[in-house]
Image (cartoon, rainbow, N blue to C red; front, side, top):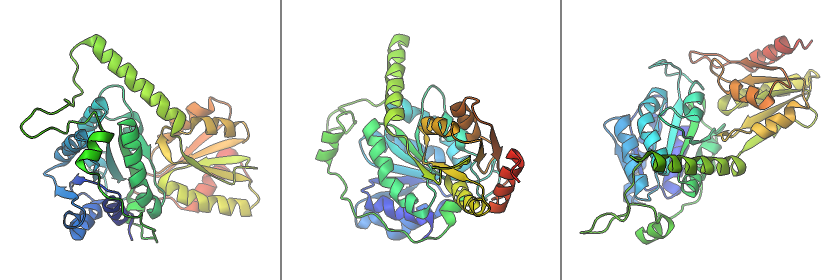
Length: 354
């Protein structure tokens, strides 16, 4: 099935309580699949096409604030509209899953694939000092697997989680093993697991008030210090990455998502030509695998950051390397997906490899 379809099926099976979204290419199959499967008849999961992306992210704010497993999905310009709601969720420490199946930009751009939302996801497109946990799937299987992982991390740390996919992974069809069915939690279980949630009582005020507003500067600073401590904990415990042929590598490619799939073929071709090269694929774009890239930079002669954009992740790679090793970047824009041969040639040109 398509990557978008896998996300929808995984959401039903992972005990998701509600999906609120709005159609936009190239992710519309998520909503379409949920509508076709009618999970409200089987698991009780709510599926609603909201009137806009702004409405859908605020529905996630409300659902997550009551301790429910809720999610939305969109593509690049739609996710841009959600940034205020995402900052509110981060400030109020509300868990939730946001899926971004990226397309080219800026603005409305194109409906073709891109990885141009890296900064938007990892830097936080809304206001204030905050982060989202950002997972970057590179296969249809990971599109399915990361749904449950996203909810697990979102509730463990009370933080919004973004699955940063792209039009390639969303539209490609591959074999996938769907997760087993997980029953939705009862109201009693939600109250026990989420004592912070505004679950409410019939005829009574909600137990908790969920807000990101604080009028006293001293109190707001303490809240921000609490958030920063949480982010430090996440950096220490939740970094995820995958390595390919790095043991004896003299050169390294760093790539995520669909770019990493292209890089794998490029590495295979270069190895057959006698070039000792490896791949590091960040799975969490935030927290970023800074420490491992630092370690590998002391081993290799050069690092090529390959991403389907003008060069965004390359800044995090350069910060990790701290000038120890030359770092270059290769990518395409406008929805053009590079070939493995182009990646091979970029590496040879940048590091003068004969």
